[in-house]
Structure formats: structure tokens, C-alpha cells
Figure 1: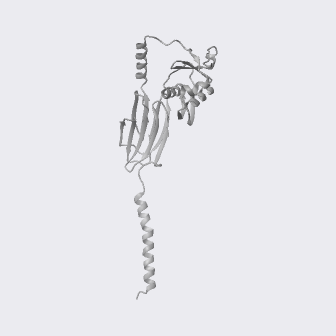
Figure 2: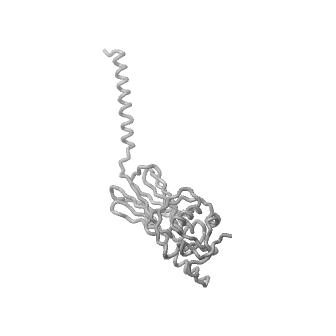
Figure 3: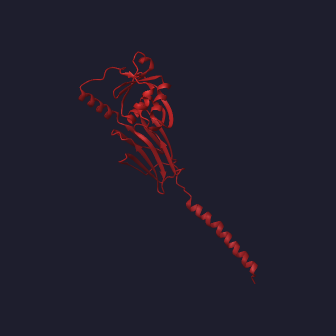
Length: 260
């Protein structure tokens, strides 16, 4: 005959089994066995590239554009991500940020594009991944530039010209809007293309300036970023109305400054 002590012992044994098997079964159910995506952003020549890799081929993906604001969305199904949400500030003439988020059925990449009307994109399929290329169509930019010059009926005088832009004038010319910048071994003209897009000037970089820059600044005034590049690479900025020319300092020694 079973006594009260034996019944109580059986009861606690049953509770222990429930407590042990319950969470373990739940954990097994919640475990994500999908292959993991990895990614790497790079600035290549004059455009942005995001390389997305996995241990197995990516068979299913969908890319589409959204407007107001301009975005490229890429959905990849059947994969997981180590982080829940990832944000990559880019601040390029064609791209401001890449946002990556894990959803129950997919990984979503959102490329926040700038308002430039000549941006193009490609999603190339690789053996074990995808490559997303975002760039400004240089042919369209050159064509628009020629059209504008034709309407004015005049050609720009050979550089250098204008007056030297004094450092005290930088905040006024480039504004005090704050930017976060990440450039890695990018041509210096790409930096000034970014500046031109932000401040509304036309900026021409002298052909004999061929340096590449690596620069990372977080939440700084745009004028500070320009001053940093000017001083680091020995440059001078020549201003003529809304047109700015970037030349080497030694090429601008005989040009007057805009200082009063």
C-alpha cells in the first residue's frame, strides 16, 4: 500500500520532469537552424558595394524601389542574421545609410538613397551570395553638364580662378549642418562630390589632385570636415560665386583671399 510520503515523492518527481522537459523542448523549437548571412560594405572606385555572403547559395531574393524617401529594398528568404538590427552609416553622394533587420521569414536590407536622379543599382548573383552595386550614372551627369553649358553659351575659364576661401568663411559657405562620414580609400573628388550635394555648390577638383582619402567623422559640422581634408592634403579652395575650385596650395599662392 502506497503511503502519503510515497505519493508526495511521486508528485515532486512529476514536477521535476515537467520542469526539465518543458524549456528544453521549447528551446529546441525556437532554435534557428537557417544558414547565416554575412555582409561587407566597401567603396569601390566611384560607387558603393555591399557583398552579402552565406555558406550556401542564396536561391530566393527580391529587390524593389520605394519613393518618398528614395529607398532600395532587398529581401532574402531562408536565412538568419546574428544581430537583430544593423545600421551602417555611409554618407555617400548616392547612399546615406544601409539598414539591415531580421524578420521571421526573411532578412531585409534597406538602402537609403539620396535624392540624386541619376542613381542606378544592380543586384549580382554570386556562387554563395549577392553583390549590390549602387552608383551615380556618370554618363547622365556629363550629359546634363554639357546641356547646362550649352544653354549658357559660355565655357568656364581655366583654373585656378576666383579668390581663396578663408577658413573663417567655411561655416557660412558649407553651413553648420552636422554629418557622419565614412570614407575608406576613396578618391578625394568623391568627398567633394558629397560636399557639393550637401551645400548646393558646384565643386571642381583640379586634375592633378589624385589622392585617396580615409576619413571617419561622427556628427560634426560639414565645415569642419572640409577644413580637415583641406589641411591634411595641403589644398586651397577658390570661390567664384556658387562655383568652388579645389587646387593644391602651391598653385594658389598668387591668388587674393576673400578676407576683408
